[in-house]
Image 1 (tube, rainbow, N blue to C red):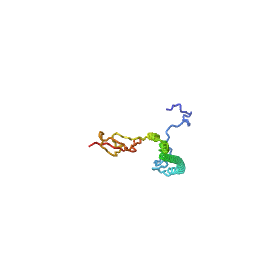
Image 2 (tube, rainbow, N blue to C red):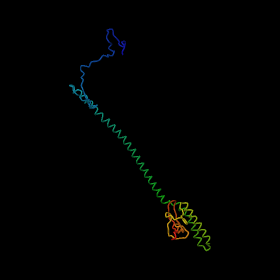
Image 3 (spheres, rainbow, N blue to C red):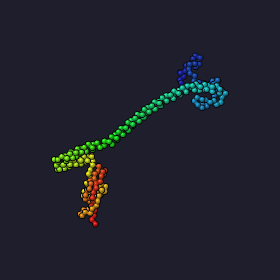
Image 4 (cartoon, one colour):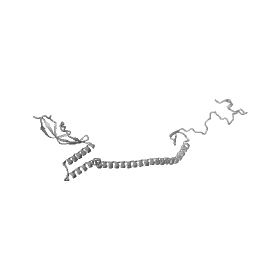
Length: 231
């Protein structure tokens, strides 16, 4: 609340003109209170007044000025947005092209590796078999000589057979020789059945041809003769 000392009083007991006059002001006689309705920030509708013509004319002039400035600003914003979108589209397009090139190269490498695997899967196995082949060729050449000894040839053949078995076992090939074992149709193939005294029915009494399996997969069943019960 103001103090009395805040007001300066001149000798004529009148309020100093420089002191703010806080008394309520009356509206000017020439001010016109026109009721209006705001339809749009740029548009004003006069509701009821005899001075309608003056007020509406002023608003229309302002709208004309805005209509000139707004399109330029809007076009500038659209151009900026278009530039940003174009830049992002170019980045995505380049990334897509790089990924496509990488996928094509990966597909080529996979196809090449598969082709090499099919071609050279037996490379190591063949290398091991070459030693067996060399031994067999040496035995065949020794058998043609006049001084060839049957015992020496037999020892050479046994040594070659042992080399072959060692090579097969190295690559997971196992021999199936079920002599005196129970017949198993999963691994054996019965060539014949014979009644044999003092032999339990279903026992393999003779192996006509050995079988082989690669790891857990049957390559060839053993062909056998199976004992049957005597009637």
